[in-house]
Length: 299
Image (cartoon, rainbow, N blue to C red; front, top):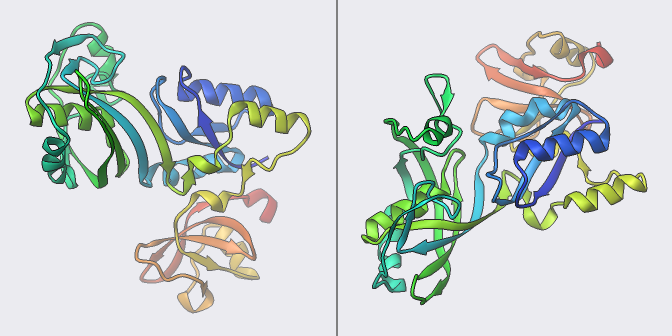
């Protein structure tokens, strides 16, 4: 069994919990996820099965989309609703105040990862330091925000906004929420989060764990998507002896490759008919194998 499953992760489970659950259900050890979602976050969590685990890095690299609820006036040590409140005020805030600063959060921006995160520092996760009450200096890093807009605004004692955010990998929506509050001078935290897209996988097409369990019970594996479903790379095709050469790590001249999509980057999906046999990389001499699947079956 191999492929990718678009799982709708429920609140209360870690990403690793979902992997363990899938291993027990499918009775397969080679299963992994493509990027951690906090336990309280729901939404799209692509799960890779069999040879699909070798594609996890490509899926993780792709963009994400979220619907976030931000509550203004309350700052927490985790930047979300699960942390300790460290400041609370009643802000005099209107929707237009938030609208005025959102353009500053578009494009390439710098973020300092939160202390309660899985980022490593000197061999330890930041959250390990945070749980001991230790705060250490973290270097900022650049992320890209492709879209950030207000879907809804709630004029309450503590104003709330529902934000639609599209961003690059590695973006902390908690930190965006926190930084919005800092920019407005009232503090804020992320009070709820749903991931609506991870790469090409959309929440409208995701499967709940209950749906997957029922499908397996009746031997329906339509939830298992092909390997190609998770990769947004141009395609090229090989045939005959060049397939065997590719699977054995040998390059192929450009004129011997059938190119379906030119693309901008050096990496491509390498196909034999409709089957993905690996990831290739263009160099001056031609197409080289970068990652090969199914060597034993094809060799």
